[in-house]
Amino acid sequence: MKIKLLYDPIYSNNINRIFLEALWDQYFVREPIDTSKTYNPTECLIYSDFSTADQWIQPWQEKGFKTIVDHLWDSWICDKWETTDQQLVLRSTKWFWHNECFCFRHLGYQNLKRTSIDDKTFLLLMNQLRRHRKELYQRIKPILDTDAIYSFRGLDIPLQNAQDSFDLTTTAGDRYTDIDWYNRTKFSVVVETGTNEFEFSSHRRGEPWIIHTEKSYKPFAFRHPSLTWGPAGILAFLRAQGFETFNHVIDESYDTIKGHALRLDKVVETINDLNNTVKNDKQYFNDPMTIEKLEHNYNLFYNIDLALEYFKKEIVDPIYEFASKA
Image 1 (spheres, one colour):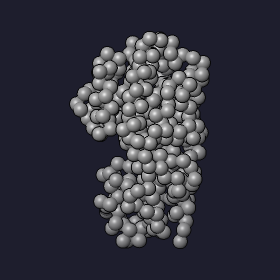
Image 2 (cartoon, rainbow, N blue to C red):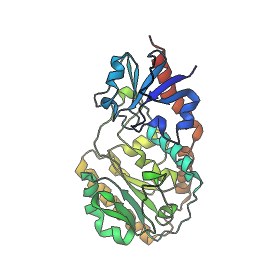
Image 3 (cartoon, rainbow, N blue to C red):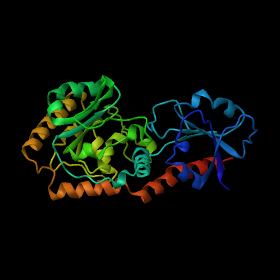
Image 4 (tube, rainbow, N blue to C red):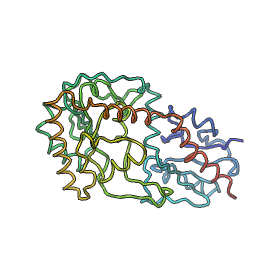
């Protein structure tokens, strides 16, 4: 018998995302809570996203219901939510990667074909205003207008040097992508959500772990070389997951530099050097090894069998194990 998951439809969470609904329905019965109904604590679990759980699940816990706190989007452990006999904090080592795989497949992005035009050098897309993003923007601003397709919504800078802009009202929302951005540029500059040098491996079943988000995976989906302004070790982390980086054509030594300021200096130097190189060599990134790595990353990113395997292993199985405990 499938476990019933009750959720508050007022709040967004992973079990009512349109591109994941069919997947959840293979294993569970999902039901929006109806306040006019009476539920049996032995027959269902209460499901909530961690960002809204403290607003509504406590009364259910007091009634004896077991609860699941979905911590898939913010998987590092430094917060108040802890797993107990009555509460499962749901985490997954590869959620950012596999959620994007499911989402991008739903949007048909796996069918987009990159055709190099390369009239600009690099792609830089930034949303929320954060200190480390503003630092990078100020340091490379002199080359942006001439050489990049870029945006920085946090500074009210819409997409520059491109035909269209982000339309957050579409079904793609903030995952909206135009393949033209990738056709017209040679590489991506990825700016992660943070640059803090935290690593949590103890609760990762021994797997290496570092703070990261979906941003680091997006170039893989569109066969784009990339470099990253983020935590030290982010490239090593991606390689540990099986992806290839581009140290044969990009100086990736910045990834080993621990200090924020020193790493930023090296990232800026690398962007400027690579920008100049690509402008002077239109065949850069067309070498066989780069092409092989781009194909490898694309195929690994969209590996649906692997995504389904981890969904069952790290989400479905822990929920059923939790529910079965007396």
